[in-house]
Image (cartoon, rainbow, N blue to C red; front, side):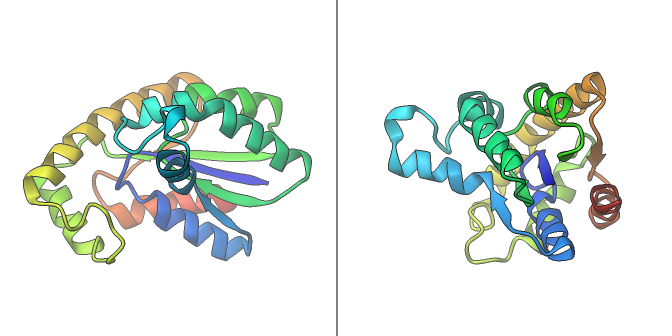
Length: 184
């Protein structure tokens, strides 16, 4: 089984992915690691960390789709998370392999900018956290972009019948609901 968790930056994807991986005792793969491999290893492919998530998803889709199908073929269980999967793309695989994928999306459509800044400051204290060291104005701008992205994701999830968990209010409660859905 592949557990696919996608959505907006700072919506809790990594937190829930690590929880699912630990619960299921299976590997975890961040699409961000792959994207940074493209960014730093083969920049000529035009996939890099300065693009918006939907652009990264579109550019990486052929690669990700082939990788996911290979993992399904060899029956490899794994939790895969990252922004670079869109509902309108992953639905192809969901329809083709309905018993091999469990998918959910996370986002925040109604979060207050100041509340999100406080949440990022509270939970983003890891020295490897790329956003935590940024100034408040940068984080606020990033949050506004991710609210817009969350709205697109939520709309696409509704269109394709994929589960969407909004973490605007009560991040940990929303992640608990997503966890229950994923490991059901």
